[in-house]
Length: 510
Length: 107
Image 1 (cartoon, one colour):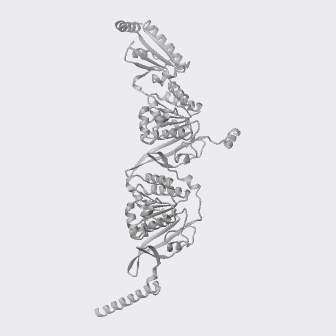
Image 2: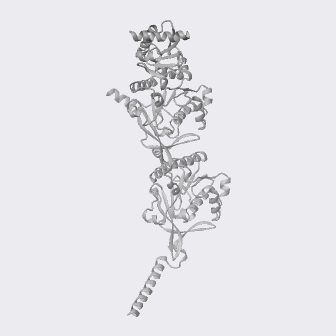
Image 3: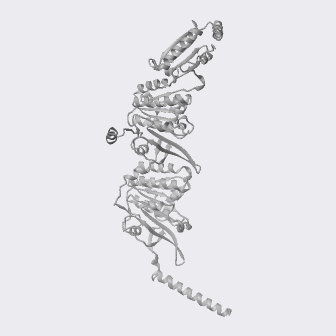
């Protein structure tokens, strides 16, 4: 007990960073150093790529040479396959930084004549490790290797392999398939490995999403959720949620909305810098115009802005906004305003967010506009979208980026569910643009539904879009007398006249 | 033992026709129990069935790890019959003499 307590208190679990974006955040610093980690997943989940990226990052970033034992692919195939992900394996091989070895497994050429083990593999592995003085090792995949062994040998040799790897003091990733494998069927990984990571590729609404989950991490805290991840031309990106939210800073700086009267409504100063803003409203109420004028004012203040459009193409937005006196074209040309445009159905949600995130990393904008997020709602179930948005907002907050979403809602849903599938609860400022009827006229209106941390106006303002931009005016500006009185008097008058008429009608009927 | 003499005859016949020797390679890992058993077993089999008609090379992969790669060795011990063709691999400590003889076409 005392011994245990002592180690518990003083021991900091040594970890080997994978260098894979997001994964090190979830694992609190990487996979167990000098120990084997099991990477599970079905075919096509990205096991090999993830394992390979772990090695390449080890070489490039941490100066740790690597060994890759391929049981499935030939080494030249492997070099070719990962080339599309930007990994120049051939160069590292030439520099003696990585050693690739294909291990041919051919069950049918072999006959069992008695007891055996896989010492041959150990010898080859040992030789490979010595060759490049490897600190990182990948065995891909275990199923292929163990397919040729009987169960008894398998069990024994798997344990021996793990302790052998520990003895050699290498950080190893062993890949294996879920379900179809001997391994999981017999629950081997449950008790013999310190860290188990599972990958999964799920298809919902015809869009596939890759997910990662840490099943087990002995002796370390880790994120428990499923995290979406992406494989693109630059390798793997995992999108974590919780850890980033921890180091959010709240900002007291303010940023103008670009509409003078709107700033006035928001405690006379505008939004908080680094906050999230939602503009919701029915179609044609001017959401994009509000967003564009915000972007315009940000750019005019010489700060960069990213405008992510999911509905209209950028040149259409530029044309339309010119008609209301907002000229975005020169801003785009000078590079201060960047457009990201993609149809939501083109790719899955994660891909959109990660693509946007990559642009953010590049241009470091002060403001990000997403117009509209409701178009993304068509992609995947709503709960997914919400969690994605939460992650994204968290990310932006840690970067101190102000984000403005627009959300299109249908007329009926305002009464039923005005909160846009719960998005409004996660934003700091929520504004609603609406068509209302004033004196038998349809009028655009804007009101601030909520704005955290500031005194904001509760007025419903008339929202006027002209060729000079957007202006907010009091609703009753056109009428001489106060609106409530005029409305009531006209109504009373109407009521009186109709009642009189009806009485008259009744009398004539008699 | 009639079966043994028959198999001996068969082997002799096969060898006489070609006047070639059996070429066998046994890969072992140091002095592990399986390896030692395998060496003992193959010596007995060869002496009984192939006396004077075989070349047996015992290779310790600890001493020659590069040969393990060259011959695609994973499981140990393993006996590779290089000649007569086709090449055959027998994994394990060769304690099942029946299978060994069958695979070496001596049974």
